[in-house]
Image (cartoon, rainbow, N blue to C red; front, side, top):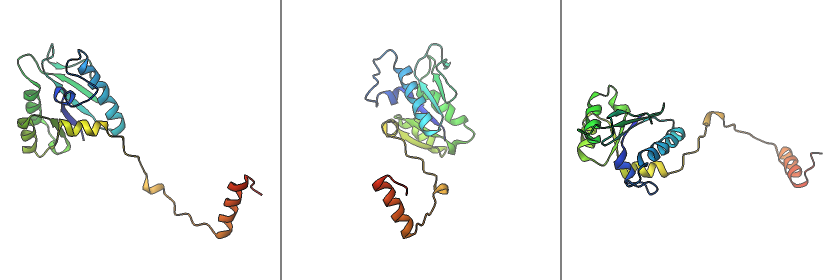
Length: 157
């Protein structure tokens, strides 16, 4: 499930990046690259007022970076893109703007507020457990005694 994220809304919720930092967008992109590596998700992050507007060279295979033109805003770009997505139920929209979130909900998209997504980014990844590979091992009392002896003495005789 890909995420579409209002970048500046999210930066405002992160404790280790400031909107006053001249490299705030690049720092967020680095954090999102780490997030996508942990979750196997992809992201489109939209920022306000880039020169020029459109896809940025900061984009990677898993994080597409888009800047709104000077005549637009991240909110407008996101609402336009939300309207054009062919598989809306597979997307999650991340924003603090109620109009953006409502537009997404009207297309049956998942939504998260920027603070909710910031918490999600900060939380440790869930451990991956492959239930199919778990074995139901039954040991006889003799085998248990043999292993106990081995670990207590270090001797396998």
